[in-house]
Structure formats: C-alpha cells, structure tokens
Amino acid sequence: MPPRPRRLVVTGSESTGKTTLVSQLAAHFGLPHASEFVRAYAGHKGAPLDASDHWPIAREQTARHEALLQQATIDGTPLVLFDTDLLSHVTYCHHYTGGCDAGIEALARDWVADHYLLLDIDVPWIADGVRDRGDRRQELHEAFLATLHRFAAPFTLISGSWQERYARAAAVATHWHPVSP
Image 1 (cartoon, rainbow, N blue to C red):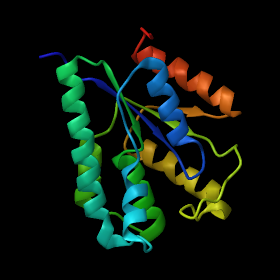
Image 2: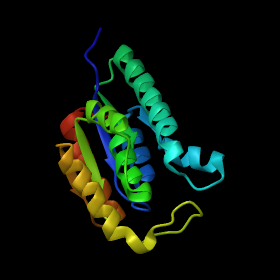
Image 3: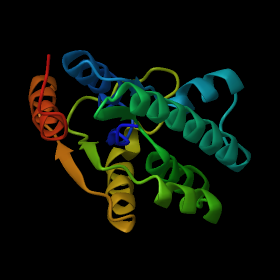
C-alpha cells in the first residue's frame, strides 16, 4: 500500500477566503480535498452552535477526513487538502464557548497536519448570514495563531490580495506536491 498522503490545511478566521483557496489549489494540482464541515452542520441546525455541538462536529469532521485520507492512500495521492480541521474547531470552541473538551483537544493533537496555511485578515470581511465576528477579526486571528503555536503546528501566514494569496499558497503546496498537471 502506498504511504499515507501528506495533509495541507487552510485555516483562519471568517471571511478570509479559505473555501475558495482550497478549491483553487485542488483544481490546479488535481488533488482531493475536504470541505469545511461545520458550516453545513450550522446551517442544518438552524440555531447558534453551543458546547453540545462540539463533539458531533469533531466526530463527523474526523470521520470525513479519515475517509478521504484512506481513499487518497489507496489511490496513491501524495497530498490532500482540507478546508479547516480539528485545530480550527478547537480555536472556535474556545472563542465561542470559552473552552474545549480535553478529549477533542487530544484528538486534535493526534490529527495535527503536515502544514497549515493560516489566512490573514487583510481582506474585506463579507457578511453572509453565518459569519458573525467581523468586529472581532483581530482577536480571532490571534486565537488561531495561539492554537497553531500551542499545538506546535507548522504553518505559513498567507496574506495580500486574492491573487497574492493564491500564488503564495500554490508555492507552499508545490513544496508538498512538486508535480502539478
């Protein structure tokens, strides 16, 4: 069986272009990717998330990521892209509810990816009915930085215009997947 693929995660606070960037990188490199799970979960719930949602989100996100990694391993894909992961979930748990279950933090520690692209907050914040922290972007960005440092997760800060973000992210992805189509 081929080696397990490397994991590259795009993370950061709301309205920084994570979903768009993951889709662009996946298309450019021909790589599988996992979309952000919590957004669909929140939309389905139809009410504000609270601490009772932490474990259901963590379990489903982990299951989806594991399934994608297993398939990529079978296919011999060297790199998989993720639109957020459990470190993002830990950050949001602390930010919204003031804490995170120790079991979720342990699971997140076991799932630290090979590299993270932390998207900066230097682009306009756009309200979309789900995003609600436009006035607290700096605080949330600092929380992401703190989580990445606390979990000793390797990362690259991605900032600038949309085009500059893509170019920088693609350069980092090329390090992990040097052959593009």
